[in-house]
Length: 199
Image (cartoon, helix red, strand yellow):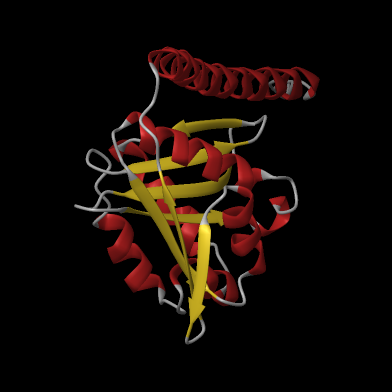
């Protein structure tokens, strides 16, 4: 699995990911069921420079999950979503770990997550991350105070970030190369069309 920050040039990929969610998955991600137009407008307003959007990708560079960190004056909000066919593989856990680490590296001192009380996977993720939980009126709130990073952690983080980017684009190149090879092999197996002899 490769986890890396997305850029403004990948806005459409984020939109495609969210629009593919079922009504129930949209309800769990956004705490209400949103229309396609509302989701599209939400993604159009994402600030990829100020905030962080992490993508989790499989071995064929296909997006499996998304995590967002929206910066706030006192605390920064996190949100998560994992593709239905990829759940149960600790993708959400890896995303929350990486997002909390990135928040620390960016100087954030407190993070929180708002989610519906019946969103059991999100509750488990927050608990594993050591977040303090509270619930009221069908909604849950989890928060965590963050410690500043050490110099060693900063150095390790920069190293891992560079690896995640190179790993993703290397994987993407291999997938593209593989598809080209497959196409050329398929073309080679096609029978040659012999032109009809002139009468």
